Length: 292
Length: 315
Image (cartoon, rainbow over all chains, first blue to last red; front, side, top):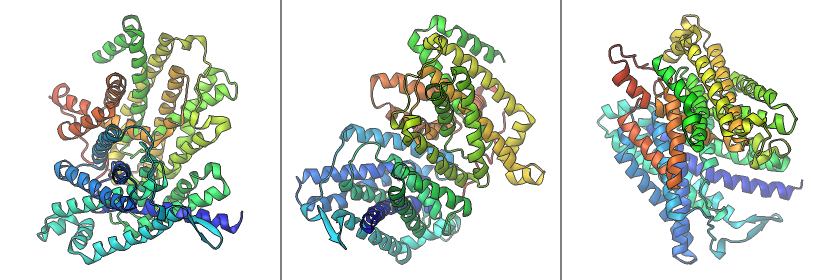
């Protein structure tokens, strides 16, 4: 095993971690602020990927297609989320977690079948513009260019979310609502609107993750399956509702899978689950402070 | 009691009157219903977030399948080994899980269960990898649908009787006390973790029985039996039927399997129908189908109090 293979594997693992981070940041926001375990979060990720494909396809491979797709897909999923939240979910906040899981599972089934209706069961692939194709050579190792885009996108999203949470009024209120929603409501804040905004931002991130992953993978039904469970585990391992926890958990997931690919490829996908289980046994409520 | 005898008589008469396809469907509903009822022992009666119950179903089925095809065991021995293996796995997984509570319990179980799923998915020489194992040779009796149905119906009836007895036993009542208030149960001297672990092992045993019956009925196993999607489906069956009732899980299983098979014949979008149904259910029948019926019609004079703290308080 030479250093080049290790570095290459590490970059692939880190870019996978960035996708996981963007998606699980949305999940952890929704869990932290609204206390809703959103099972259809993965479906929105898939919707994001399909919308990105459609936008890029409609522009016929024009170089701007990908950038437009990256902007449009998250807006679509945020819109879908907002409508669902206002019409249905906002009436269920007082219910038990299992009921919320049941509800979001129902929405997941509906969304997945709608995706099947609109895009069909075939595989799609989104070709990135020529400037992002191919590989760059760093220290004699060929690294796929698009993965470098992901390595930039992840930290950008992290900084953006941090600014939102700490520098805007809505962000501050949603952090307060995550800690004590009754107190926030008692202070005269319309908690319901904060919840709607947090949910929309969460869904936005799911769509953004899907759009970003689209050029690196085949876009197909079921692409959400392993991602959903992975991001739930990441959120728990990092500490529920903790943005930096989602980042730590994602890095743990992406990097252990890369290590797994180097040492025991056949069972590489087992490595993140084993690490998750070990972390939960040592620190049952996650590595960083949980919002609950 | 009367209802029980009527159902038993109906099940016994089914192969004589129903077309073969419906006999098969009925057997599939019974197997899935047993699986869901076994989950409800820990979910509804135990208040545990058992998020990956499918793993024990899969272990039961895979043990039987691997025993017959790879190890050359006689079918009956393999069928007995399935539930035992599932119970042993629950002992191992549960040993760690009962240390955590609620959502964390469920998440730890998901990650440990996913490890088992990966073994089934990737250990090609033994489990057949993502293809699974098909065409498992079975005794001649089980190669006809009525034969398989007879085995399924008898075993499911016996298993449900045992589970019913467990729920009514002092152990079952203690379990419900733990569900309603773990702290109080602890203070009263109940060893909470041992009870929860015992419930998990028992539930996994019957999930293993269901897995073995699936092999008897379908003669195949595949890794999706241990995937989290199936586990979530079983969970939904319990909630759909009413997780505070004994019969709810079976009713939920019947609705889900029935929808998949019957609606699935007309449209490939049967999950859309199910999704809409679930959303409607939450708004109009939050206690599930049987929970609603029980409150509304059957025990109107002496309403069974709905356990307030079941499933844990929020947060």
